[in-house]
Structures are given as structure tokens and as C-alpha cells.
Amino acid sequence: NNSVINNTIFSNGLRGIFVNTDNTTVHGNNVYGNSNYGIYIYKVAGHVNVTNNYVYNGLNRGIESQESQNISVTNNYVFNNSLHGFFLYKTNNSLFRNNTLTDNFKSSYGGNVELSVFSFNIFEDNKIIGGSDFGLRTYINVNNNIIRNNLVYDQHSSGISLYQIDGGEISINNEVFHNTIVIADDGRWPLNMKDGSSANTVYNNIFLTQHSSYGSIALEGISGIDINYNIL
View 1: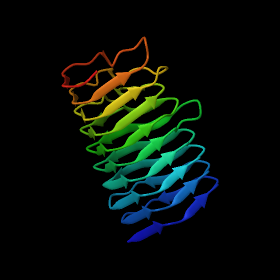
View 2: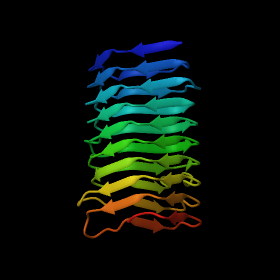
View 3: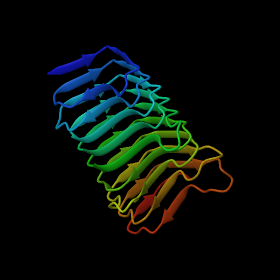
């Protein structure tokens, strides 16, 4: 097994930590000020655990996963990165639990968490706070995931968005439950579902907005959804 434990990694020209092999633990590192990614997981098949790291003040993304499966990303604190806190692309059968993401997105595009081509994952018990764009955005083929028990707070755009973009496949068959979403007075919708993103189940959530012109849920061009037992 491989391990990267209790290091201070800062101000590198590209990546802080690059994981491109299975059976690796990345734990307890202080990763900051890197030019591209703080921690980058790429083309791994399993048994990669990223836990208890501080990843912050990066010029691009905090933690990114691409073309990977069977990974576990837990108990990390990711903040003040310029583009995304988490960017998870072509990532399947994985666990993202009990992470704290605050005030990511300081550039022209980005947000705290972005999911794309993302299937059969569990995203739970995370805290997503602040940031000037979206809290948790899913687009292009985000299917068969469980998104539960997350707090998305003080968002200045949207809370949870499920939709399609750039000609990709729709986002379907996701379960969204027991989440609390609170939007700031300059934000948009706590829950936004559109572009054919159907057959999703949304229940037992709290969706609140402080904006005087928006409501709690926006639905457009979808069918076959169940939205039940939420507090709006």
C-alpha cells in the first residue's frame, strides 16, 4: 500500500498531490497555494482514501477526481480555492462524506461542488458554506446517486441544481433527501431541476431562500419526479 501522510505541500506550479495508482492513502496533509489542483485523483480503480486533509488557497480546484472509481473522500476541509472546492468527473461507485467546503470560487466561473458523469456514488454529511456561485451543481449524466444529509448554506447562486448542459445526457434516478439548503438574499433557487432531468426523488429536505423574488423549487422541462415531505 502507498501513503502520503502529514505533509505540508504548498506553492507548486501545477499540483500539490497527484494520485494515479490504487491502494493509496492521502491523510492529514496541509495543501495550499498550488497553481492548479490541491489533490488530483486520476484513473484509479479503487482503494484510494483521501481523509483529514486541509486543502486551501489554490488557484484552481481543491480536490479533483477524474475517471476513477471506488474511492473514499472523507473528513477534508477545503476552502478558498479559486475555481472549485470539489470537481468530480467520470467518478463512480465512490463515497464523499463529512467534508467541509467553504468559500470556494473566486474567479469568473466555478463553485463549491461540481459533479459531471457521476454515477452510483454516495455524497453525504457534507457542509457546503459560502462562495459566490453554486453550492452543489450536477450536470451531464449524473445518475443513480444518493445525495443526503448535507448542509448547503449561505449560497449566493443556486443550492442543488440537476440539469443538462452542452449536449450531454440528462441527470436521472438520483435520491436527494434529508438535506438543508439555505440561499442568501442575493442567490437563486435552493433546488433547481430542468432540461429533462427526470425520475429523481426528492424528499424530507429543507429548502429555504432569503431572496424576495425567488421561491424554493424551480422545475422546467422534466417529468416523473417525486418531490414529497419537504419544508419550503
